[in-house]
Length: 374
Ligand code: COA
Image 1: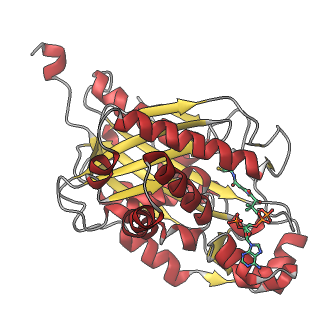
Image 2 (image 1 turned 180 degrees about the vertical axis):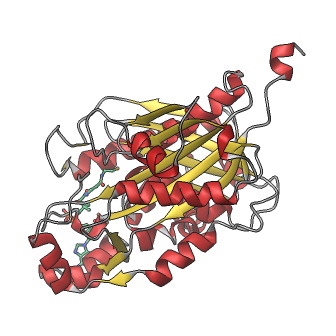
Image 3 (image 1 turned 120 degrees about the vertical axis):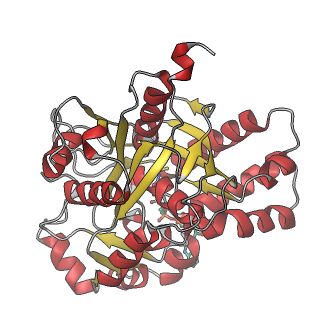
């Protein structure tokens, strides 16, 4: 082995932290407010609740607290952090990166590469891959990275996407693979499209719902085909304890998995069983957070890693409109079993207030619930 290779440290997720905003709403209450049959949101979209940010709370708060929690559980020294990379599509400034706002809160300064990554909901995964590859290249010289995926997903009032709103942040310390290792080889797929985009200055995204579902399915199919190659799809899928997906809303994931079953040539029963065993359980926290854009996939992964024995594998499919996607393979490490990060979700869920229709309408009418606010 060359000296260069000998210097490459073992790399993966050493610590995890999550944060959800302090308010929430049940989709039934939104349905009542909008005069819609609640079954459309509960059954048609498979949504349950979504997180809401109060006026004095934004993506900087979400990202900073998730990062603080991840650092607090890490056995390393914050002075050894050499990269801060944040994936978001809730930019608070067109020039100053979200990482600068977070670094300021956490007093991270010095010999650190600090930046923001944008690629719709895929940006957090890109930041994570860059941190992994930075360490594996040897350029990190053994330093750790702080990576955060954080977003507030808000749609205009009465927009069909309103029940799919949400918010959340997931932070990672990329250092020793105590919680999980991530395979160096991954399976990306991209193809330019205008399925979901937010022009500069616009408060809310423009969504072509049908196109975004088609792009998402095409991306998932292509990434899984690349992973499976000439192998038996059943054997490859069985090698994973769980399959995690980006979750714009849970029904979108179900439809994508059904499509994958068709591609594999599986009957309805087999694909339904697979969805029930390996996919649906990973979306429990997503059904309480709502869509958190860059953080969505990673909320699902954090849920799926809980309690896994060392060596157990999960697949993680990341998708961002525009569009770009990547399929990763994640292998549980020794700290997955105790899942210390689950306490973050328990604490945030127990502490959050619930908005009824009137309170939500007042908040929105005041114009205080903004996708973009500094
Ligand atoms: N009871 C049960 N189900 C009902 C219902 C009722 N009363 N009324 C409608 N539904 C079902 C529909 O049949 C449909 O299910 P299906 O897709 O399985 O057929 C589902 O509810 C949605 O209804 P639809 O009329 O298609 O919804 P919509 O036009 O209001 O669109 C979204 C809603 C969420 C799909 C759309 O706004 C959207 O695509 N949003 C964003 C997508 C996104 O985030 N993309 C980017 C990231 S990948």
